[in-house]
Amino acid sequence: MTLAQAVVAGAEPDELARLEVPSTYNAAHLRKDEVGMFDDINDKDDKDVRRSMHVGQVPMPELAPDEVLVAVMASAINYNTVWSAMFEPIPTFAFLERFGRTDPRHDLPTHVLGSDASGVVVRVGAAVRHWRIGDRVVTSPAYIDGEDPIVQHDGMLAADLRAWGFETNFGGLAEFAVVKATQLLPKPRHLSWEEAACNLLCASTAYRMLVGERGARMKQGDVVLLWGAAGGLGGYGVQLVRNGGGIPVGIVGSPEKAELLGRMGCAHVIDRSQFDDLSDEKGWRRLGAEVRRLVGEDPAIVFEHTGRETFGASVYVARRGGSVVTCGSSSGYAHTYDNRHLWMKLKRVIGSHGANYQECHEVNRLISLGMVHPTLSAVYPLTGAAEATRAVQVNQHVGKVGVLALAPEPDLGIEDHALRERVGEDRLRLFRS
View (tube, rainbow, N blue to C red):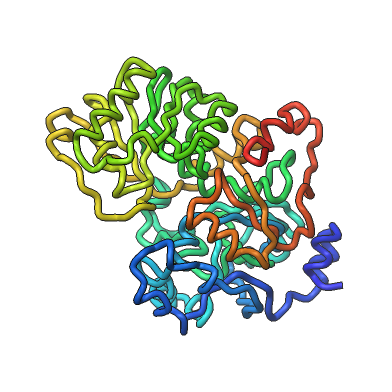
């Protein structure tokens, strides 16, 4: 029996420890010699990630003392995988080359992608104290040096902060993954492997943006405008706003997504197709008027991650003294906005990136208690990782798209059936219905 087979069979830790770690493993990856394949293509949707992503054997690295080898049962697609596979804004092999100056293991002709995973610990480095072979875990995406003093204050300020599976190698879209011990958290026991795998990157990012003391610090009664409210980030944002006593106003791109938000309990929904032109103040005014019509006031917080197409509108519609909190720019990085509406009305723009270990712990606790639910909408096999990424690239999805790695089928790995019954399948599978 191989190590992978033993994990799938539920072998005891002693048996997992005895079995040999394979020299290669199956993974979704990019190839360095294909970096220029999209150079002559301008439309990002035409940079079809199915051309650049491959699934096949890659070499197994050695573990560093503070690292853990996880047998991955399931993973998920994030937008950084889309950027990686388009080789934008720069090829991620540039990150690996730079990292390779201090850790040569990562500078390879292949880049294993993926910043989310759930699975089973199968090896631990010599310096790892809190995790054991056989532990069921989920991964958080921040890959940092725990000896950097700033980590004691906020790990996201670390000079060498890297997004695992984007700025590092050996990510989660694979049968095995290499992670820092400080990336691991216990798998929520009432969730399946794929439900558990889809949460942490987006849920923790939304938590830091909205709830954490370094974000917008939402309070009860705050009106929060959320772009992409039925997507991976937005789906968690809506839940956190509702849980915290805020008033979510979700913006979505179709009536179907609007209906989904209604079933989530988001009473105020805006169909973005009614506001095609958000390039000037005329469109911004119409959007602001619609928010006031729905809730009677301007938003205290605007939850931003779409970027160039929406940022000007976000700055405009935030109330006097309000905040725009941003963690990304999926529609483009070069933002244009009217600065008068920022400085003259005392608004703030808050940059937010990922989440530190404590914030990941806090949101994983909420998930484990059944207070925040997965936004998983579709599940692909590892061989279909490129198709899964393409679905996210062209926005043919809601919530999060999952990928099974070693798990042979969906709905495995559930341990706490009583909690699952109390939460209800209708909530846990809402995005899949």
